[in-house]
Image 1 (cartoon, helix red, strand yellow):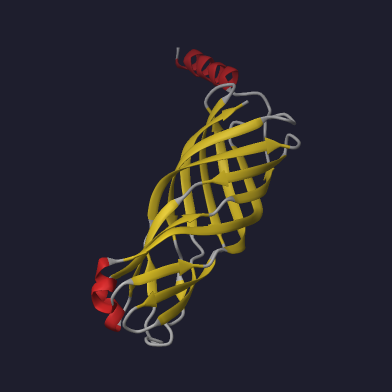
Image 2 (cartoon, rainbow, N blue to C red; image 1 turned 30 degrees about the vertical axis):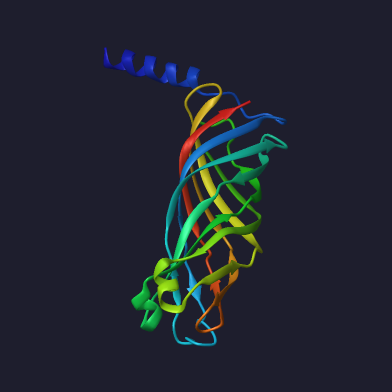
Length: 218
């Protein structure tokens, strides 16, 4: 009895396994992502050269599109935007806490290699480039209470991206996805304050982006 049940389950699983992704297929994934910066910063110059900043994590939705150039090779465009806050770590800026916030848009294009496009577990790796845009930058109320009205500008940047993930099929066209990316992001932030003039701080964000979601093959 048990043996017959196992055979039936294996047969059903085999029937549910989708066909091999073919050249010209488009894979669309909808993920929930956590963006965790591995930030390192310089000093806040020229007034606070010994004080550095930290950047918060963010959780947001993401959508990406993969075009299969061959059954094993795909090109993926990743689109998501996240909001982060920058805070002082120590000293005067540390007592202020939150210094500024910004939205980050890092469209990323990777070239992927899919190791087993017709298997039940379909791992892949990828590498590519990103162009990161910072927008809607805003000084915190705490910072403006300390130094007066403040304008915030963050410089956009190019960087590289590394990726690894796996697709697990649910049906002929649907699958679950787990994806991890490392994105190289650098910026220079300028704070134009009333009381202490213009301050600059260079920050390496370099976030780890972990995503889990659902995909459809067209």
